[in-house]
Length: 258
Image (cartoon, rainbow, N blue to C red):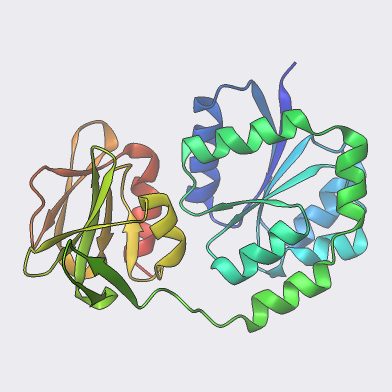
């Protein structure tokens, strides 16, 4: 039986991307609706059965989505889709909520649905009832972004710190992550790309695919590529073509246009 999913997201490209990603994971899903505001959610829930999972953006066109839960009791599993940093995410963890950082990746969505399989309905209801949405909203509104400012670079005989603003891109090769400066000096670092993604300012850095996170400053031009993909022209250039998949193209364009 298909898992019924409700998407609450105020941007059409992001809705479309979520639906496409749902089709790629190893679960049979049915999207029962795509809502774009607190108002539409408050109108929808009294007239429809509760879905199994809600993919919920935090910032909607008419306010923080937490307002929905002040007026309606929801028994669905909530998966936040968010661009907020680690301070807010820590609050989600404390409240046993799941979260996905934008742009949403297939593997992350797969893991979230695997967690859903492990939970029973009573557990979800109990956890939802214990969530302090007012506290979460307060954290979101007042959070101070403390993104990583530098990295410790170590060699066999010495070490030094490298400011983040001097890094043009990060890439992964054979299980090792490298930071590349604007002068094309490469330094191995101890973080995975996924870990870095959560530590870097999303206004400045974007994880374009599984192998690379780029600094917006290196982008010179973006070219259309086959099958809806994008190809980046950068300075400094990477040793291989930097390709953005069709599933991330819309989110990438939105990131550039902030």
